[in-house]
Image 1 (cartoon, helix red, strand yellow):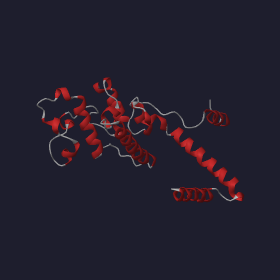
Image 2 (spheres, rainbow, N blue to C red):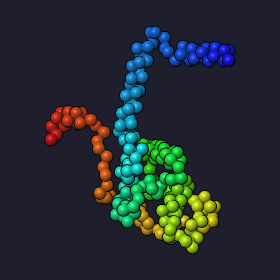
Image 3 (spheres, rainbow, N blue to C red):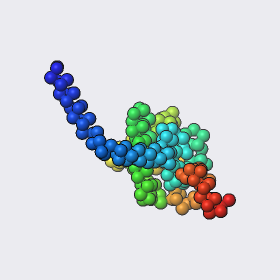
Image 4 (tube, helix red, strand yellow):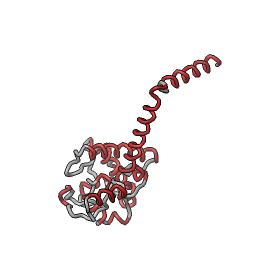
Length: 209
């Protein structure tokens, strides 16, 4: 046991010695860490990162490209009962739900940042599974004698059965979903990422009221 603790202390000491920079480099390292920390916090702020912990539908508008989906949901009957996450993330347990949100959110953020978003969003296999399970979860009392009750996203992808929206094609987003289909949709807009003091300074410098 004593030998284990000696090795542990030795490993910690070696790690600390490795991490702490030489005395002549410490000021530079502290400045660089401050810059990276500041950029990190600023990125979290402008990406509205905290909103992803919630289930607010407006969060899905952070990436701008969800206008058709938001507008069609806002004018549909599902708006009275369900939000985006009720349908598009798993609800079997909390860990799976937030893991799915993190995985999908990172993929969406990457696509949007690289500006490679498609005109029409098409669900990936994991999304198909989640939506099908949630259709059955919410409408279970209406599915007695309906064969779709036994269809999951996985067996559908293997050619077994039909999904709920193979028949209910207008629910809830309609059949016209491209970005160009709703150019004037009234959807939430993101606030400016420019701080108010900087925006005011720029306006004054350019004589803009």
